[in-house]
Length: 74
Image (tube, rainbow, N blue to C red; front, top):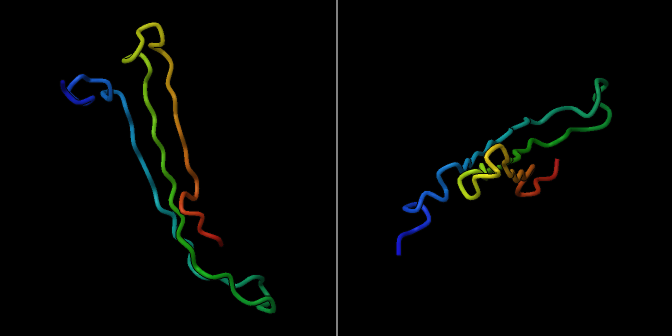
């Protein structure tokens, strides 16, 4: 028995991600409130075109998005 990749089930699958860095900054213009620390957040996504699984769903897709996947507090 072959893997899912051999059978072509994952042919129309997309995986992507991104990282966003924001440097340290002042809380306000008068510099009386202190600083906001730097942080990096990670966003991930996974999508699949459903037509490969079921031809009647040829124009349909399913997508899953995770924003700030590691719960970085800023």
